[in-house]
Length: 99
Image (cartoon, rainbow, N blue to C red):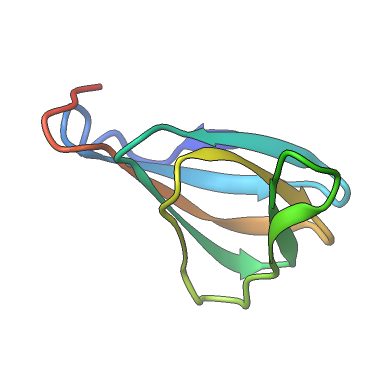
């Protein structure tokens, strides 16, 4: 579940969202071409996976607290909360794109 943190940068290239998830909750993130998503976990633990065409996950990341994870390849990512999660999600739009 994402909540707008501050709309100070509305219309610019960055969107900051507070990331809050209950244990076991899933969130699908679709990253378009040219965008970058940064996920920072402050409390709890989560797993970020990226499915491939077959059954196995093509990417499997368990971020450490306060260490940013950069998602740069376009596609669909699944964020699953292993514990109650509190963090920050930053989306940087492609050059020339507007909200």
